Amino acid sequence: MAKAELKTKPQDTDVETYLNSVENGQRRKDAFKMLEIMKEISGKEPVMWGGSIIGFGDYHYKYKSGREGVFFEMGFSPRKTSLSVYIMSNDGYPEYPESLGKFKTGKSCLYIKKMEDINEDELRRILNESLKDLRS
Image (tube, rainbow, N blue to C red; front, side, top):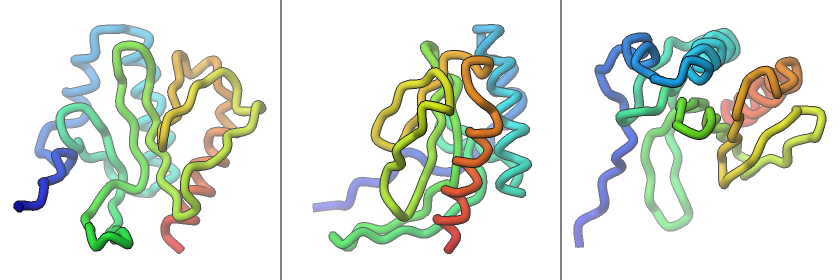
């Protein structure tokens, strides 16, 4: 049986061109804000991963099952209903404090309707901690 190939991998698509194509004006504005935050925290240039995720940096992972690959260290995607923020961590999926603001969570995702609903200092702290953890 052939191994399934990961669909989410780096692409040559221009990040700003992609973000400028986001129809929802609020989501587009928030995406550019997240772009600046993640660029600053990661110290890396943004890269499109798949058709709709902007990723920063990369790391090699290997599961106990033997499956391995390369994925971005942090990223986000301006989806129709929210800004999906992907926070990777060696410790699994973090618990987010209420002080972060108004958000929902998924497996390794933070879903933000509007950046103005989020405490930016708390978000920066979380992103910094997860990146530090992942790089250690």
